[in-house]
Amino acid sequence: MFGTEQVHLSCAAGRVLAEDITADRDVPALSRSVRDGYAIRTGDVPGELEIIGEVRAGERFQGEVQPGQAVEIMTGAPVPDGADAVVMVEHTERVNGRVRIDRSTEPRQFINPQGCEAAVNEVVLRAGKRLDYTDAAMLAAFGREHAAVYRRPVVSLIPTGDEIVEVNETPAEFQIRNSNIYSLAAQVERAGGIPRLLPIARDTEAHTRMMIEQGLAADLLLLSGGVSAGKYDVVERVLSDLGAEFFFDRVLIQPGQPLVFGRVQGKFFFGLPGNPASTMVTFEIFARAAVESLAGQAEVSLFMPFARLTSDFRHKTGLTRFLPARLSADGTEVTPIGWHGSGDVPSLTRANAYLVADPERGEYARGELIRVLLK
Image (cartoon, rainbow, N blue to C red; front, side, top):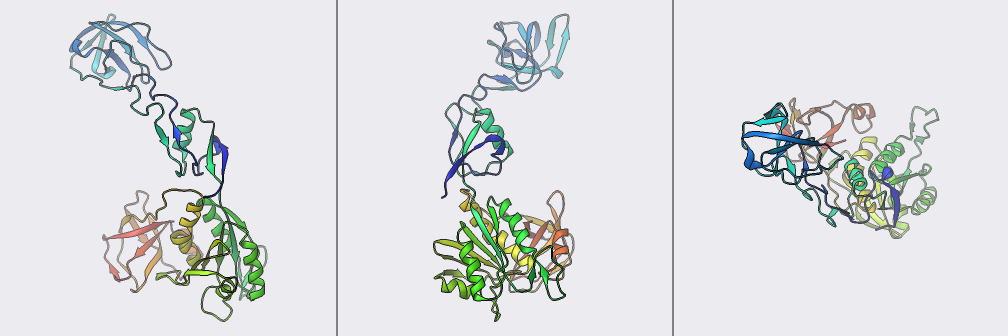
């Protein structure tokens, strides 16, 4: 686990909490009404009651509800002493300073009791949680203007290949622009890391080694390309020469079979395949969890819900395939998107998810459930 730092609650969302947060008081601090209506004693209704005043949020009624009495109350207001229920205004009739209620009530009806949301000293946020906007509200509610969070891990990103040119260059017909580095940077940011973009590693062992040695100054190293079995795919050889321990170098998925994961000089690394879809998919399936863990996140998971296919779908068996698709707004239906392989970035931009096709099943009928990986 890495170091911590204090951040203002306005900057806390997206960071991983490094301390438990406890309630500094009961919430609510007093029993309060959750409806506009009348605070009454349950034994007095049905019946007609004398209205002795009103109370709104931000005030406290100075008195006590006696038998035969009611206090008009607004949502969020403290319940007056003596009252044990609230009747919604829609279920009452007001006549000449009195209120007529023609139904019975249960004790504590429409009342949030003191401390029902959180009790003083109760842990309301635990270390290891990635904070969202609701957690920012929680910090503010309990007077925490600053919170301790884990430092964001720095992730070195190295594109590889003589065919790669920079974005501002005009590529020859046999060249491509350096796009993977920017998709990876966005994915790293989303996972809670700080991307560190390094120059393109050329297809020589000397230059690739120089770039990797620079990259190892970070907390995690991600390389894109150079991990296949080609003559000029030198990444694994260079890592091996540096004393790397390899945990695996191939996975049974498509896109993304040639995937290297290991550790060298005390730092973890991923050698991701170089085709754009392969780079994106393998980051989401494998490398994202590493970034989240290094950022201090306690629970890391790969969320792949089911959705119903809007059309028949076929694929070649043998590998788990992650194919571009469009998930409906309600997340219940998914439509495959035609594409032309791992380099087809335009198809990927039209997708908001990936179909996850089972390696042992080649055909799915319209209306069947299939897993999806959210983009």
